Length: 264
Length: 99
Image (tube, rainbow over all chains, first blue to last red; front, side, top):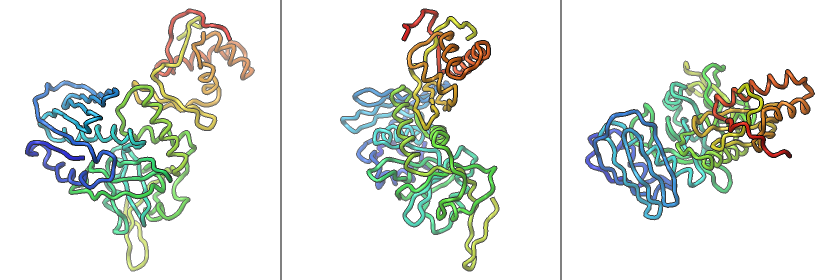
């Protein structure tokens, strides 16, 4: 994704992270986004995305834009407020990813020995804490929104620039998705490394519960029945192929060859 | 939805999927996720086309061998909750076509 925008006074924090879009291997790479800043009347309006054969229209209380599919181009007017460009790009990315049989999910993402792991949870569920406590053996894919997409042999999890409390540039890692965990702080803590190395860490979910849980964490704005049905089927396919378990991972510290667990 | 003459249908904007022997329903309007199982899933299947509540009561009676009063109370409660969650809706009192 190439981003064209005025001097980033309203989004300088995010601009650093968007450099990773340039190297990202996600399908949005070919899209050019042209941002202009404008005044918006402040009124509470939800994000609305409408699809048609030519592309998508986006609107909210602080942005209004259009994606022209044939031209691979997005023109968007954003309120000159902190976080608005970021908010729009999240919505845009979720739509483009969905067209490629993928989804954005509220989750932390980690790669360990070339395999990808998603830790899905609501805000305050511990995603950023988990990422901060992950040791050097882990590649961090993100702490807020992670991209998951279908590929021939299964699913792949990829970093996105959409961070929570984590700062700085994001490396555009990706890895085959090995397992999805749903974060639950009320469970007994399991060492993070055990989560990614043993098959029995955490509790399994029935397929329908797994699908329902994934639906609750997916970042998704298309509201037609057809798109809802397609997302439901995508998540069902994902949950059939990728184990989904509930877990409370604890931070792990490596000391002289032994493992001790940080406080959670 | 106390009127058992009324006709009920699945809301057309709901997405749903059979998963094992359950039904996972997503409402487009609220993005809420619901899992229907047992008699709830059976009634959802019966609503493949619009049905009178009375017909749903008879269906439940026959499927689960419960008496009419119990079946009626269950169906009325169930549809009331689904209507609140915007999963089903009433579309009047016209009798739908018989099977």
